[in-house]
Amino acid sequence: MSGRSKPSIKKLGTVDCDMVETTPIIFRDRLYLFEYVRPNYWQNKTGNSYFRFIDVEVDKPISAFAWGYHLGSAYVEDDVVFVYGVERWGGSEIRVFWSRDLKDWSSKLALKLPGWGIYNNSVCMGRDGYVMAIEIGEPKEVVGIRYTIYFAESEDLINWRLAPLDHVYSKDRYTACPALRFLNDYYYMIYLEAKPGPRYEPHIIRSRDLTNWESSPYNPVMSPSEEDKKIANPKLSEDQRRRIREAVNINNSDVDLCEFRGETIIYYSWGNQQGTEF
Image (cartoon, rainbow, N blue to C red):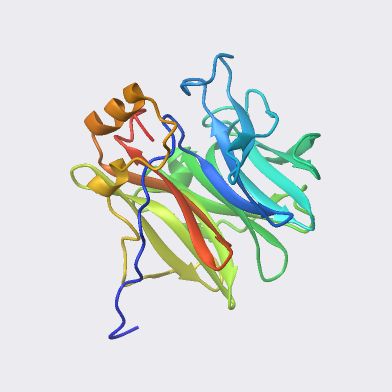
């Protein structure tokens, strides 16, 4: 990589408030955005959390599902959409939801890790099946310094088992919010690092075996900046625009991405990493 310049990422600005965990997917040649709608989301009057998809081109939500579930991610295979979430922040169970039309959903317990606290996740097709990166926060003897990313494996995207415990990154510091991909015999993972300040920045690493990892010389992938506060959605109200202007910004987190019409589409969150997030 010597002599190459860092790839350019163009930040387009903020599209919503109170929205953090999202996954862009391509489903039947259309771009959709999976969203984990938190109870405090400005438009959520139900008092509960849920999942939904947005048809990005028309900015239209599809029916809500997975009521009471949290911290999800989405994956598409053979015109079936799979979504994975936990029953509570720090819960011990991951449930899988799947659908062929984004409206009618089936579900099943995908993985249970008694005594472990599960948070974010990400799924990709790997070398010999499917792989899930799982952000773990508890117990301390498992995670070391909170948070730590472990892995699970599956042949069918529904039934999962924990991978060997040496498949991990990284017990020596804060490593959260995974986005996992497999390309040219490498697993690539974007994750969140906590820096002094505090300041939270996404980094990218790669591995052939999920055990030995190589960090990119171009890290961090992104950093908090005034560009995060640009307005990318004309529908945002004046009150929302004021919130964006006045917000403390120490964080670019929860990165996820896909390729669509020759471009890499990146979604991420910014804010104070303590609940005021965009």
